[in-house]
Length: 263
Image 1: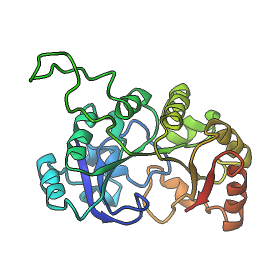
Image 2 (image 1 turned 90 degrees about the vertical axis):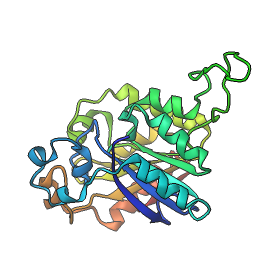
Image 3 (image 1 turned 30 degrees about the vertical axis):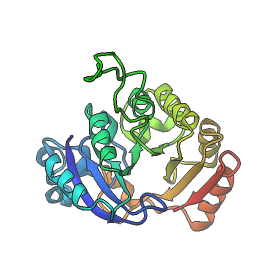
């Protein structure tokens, strides 16, 4: 795994549990409002994003050191949050999460939903993993976890027609919708998140997004951050929506999901 950061303690990122946060390096989107450019560009960062002050705060962490830390915190931490960047572009994510689960931790995954195949694998690895049993020689799953994640948080960037403009990337929106379907049907605890960007997130966009994630457990809405370096620093000039406008967005969202909250 390409690990770009570790927050050793959090009471906020996995509600109800004490967690550590692992930040993976690299992302397949370049969301204009993203405030983690040092994780988006894990290689060649100096040349691609040298304007960002955070560049000196993205050391690569050895996986062995991470697991030594997790072993030392067993019984004191409840969970590990895997975020990014975008974790699902890491091909060894299943192996990585399995190692965390073997230590007895809950695992929460943050994702942009562009890799539904990986999500399906993590939620239900049984059809994909068929190692031969060392004891019997039979082709059966021996000691493989029934699930590799316990909670999923997926970002919904905007309405379909605005996805490229918001993410700075060509996105297969059918994969976004497939990921939403997989998450909701998984019956795992989950949430969807949308950053409200004035001019790019309207009430009409909210209704369109709501129809896509209809029936979901939770939908969190948050204002764009403008007091920190972003992928597109032009957005720092934008005035975030007011609390009143955010509440109006929340009312719309509440029509589609079980709980719509603001952050």
